[in-house]
Image 1 (cartoon, rainbow, N blue to C red):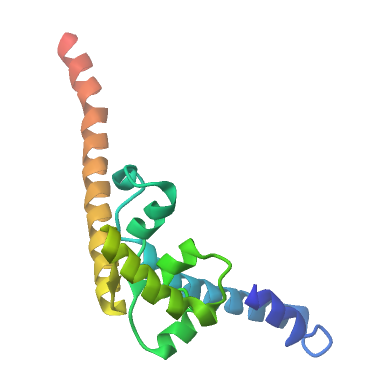
Image 2 (tube, helix red, strand yellow; image 1 turned 120 degrees about the horizontal axis):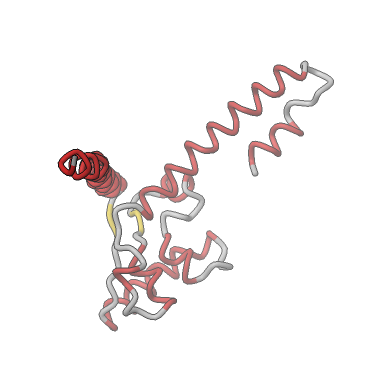
Length: 162
């Protein structure tokens, strides 16, 4: 990973102490985690799940589950080509410099054969992620309420038999 490489190349033990090197490593790892979350979350969360798409063949399931992020060359550079996430799944060994060509072809083929092809802006994707997070939070709150009720029901049943 990038943080490991920077840790051993840019921050040699000779120049700084172990404590500072460890702190730098932790900060770089945290930054890398935030970056990976930025790349991963908009492409996946808020979309259909594997259970919703079991009717599709395995290869096309990835097309239906993920989405592409439309944007500028800067976004493509920041995401290292993973803003074309559908093509990343379909053509895993294709270099990032050729993904834009595959994106056009994939979009046309999906339209021709009726396969859902999702593409939206980063803000729309983050909005879907936020709606998904709120939905999951409400499910968790409901589950917590049910757990409390189910814990109290046996107490009520036992207290009524005495």
